[in-house]
Amino acid sequence: MAETAPKTTEKKSRWGRRIGLFLLALLLVIILIIVALRILITTDPGARFIEAQINSRSFGPIKSVELSGLSGDPLSNVSVVKLELKDKDGIWLSVYNLDMK
View 1 (cartoon, helix red, strand yellow):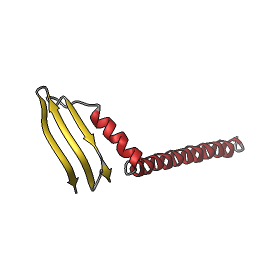
View 2 (cartoon, helix red, strand yellow; view 1 turned 30 degrees about the horizontal axis):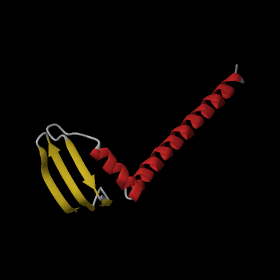
View 3 (cartoon, helix red, strand yellow; view 1 turned 60 degrees about the vertical axis):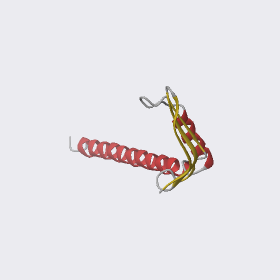
């Protein structure tokens, strides 16, 4: 009986280490994905992706949003060449050369 106790403890210890390493690896993967997405949105393909996502949506009474020329960092300093909001009657708002800081 005395010999089985250490083996059981070793097995539990190994499983604990495996679970700990798995959780650590999962956390690192999540952090890498977040950092990669943060970097991606500051690139031209990232800006085009954001434009496509915004342009394909409607927001309540605003039937469409047309956004073009997005550049910069969308989380701090962003520039937009053209922004148009359209409702059921047509263009409701047009903004050109918009800089948001």
